[in-house]
Length: 121
Length: 106
Image 1 (cartoon, chains in turn green, purple):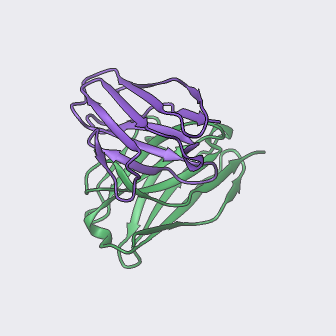
Image 2 (cartoon, rainbow over the protein chains, first blue to last red):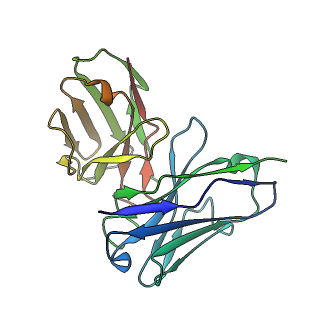
Image 3 (cartoon, chains in turn yellow, blue):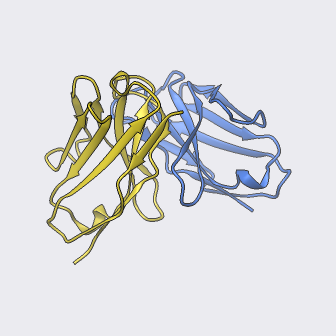
């Protein structure tokens, strides 16, 4: 059974950075990509970025380009998202999601439980 | 970027009633549209991919149809557990994008 387990909630001040992890199990990690999707309080879903879990190729939404960095550790089947220069409007739940194949143009068949990132002075 | 519009924003119905949700795309998607269900405090759950292909474990009361720019998700007879927010998502063109959601409430 596929499981994606994310790290716990984080609180940051504006201008700081945050790292969120997403540990996968139940499938061959390098056969699929991982995307990150966020959801502001009471809001909808916003796709942020994708990483090829095998080769490490990345694809970032223009809105986050320059502030976001994705990486993976294939030895632990874990994906990481770093978001820098945080602002108050980055307060959201951040989800990792597995794409059904290893490209950025996918649907998401498994999701992590979400990580709340709160940005406040 | 492809923009998805969902209607209505909120659908107020009772258990046993039929729900019809719409998703309209700003450009042709072919059949590259998916539907998700999200309950409060939970991650989204994939219901359908490729416009009408039901995901594993999705009850038969859920059906999806459509192509190009107009898509529909139908719940034939609402069960209490179906009250949630439903999102459509396109993967026809980068970046993938989601609609704003339809809330199905009692």
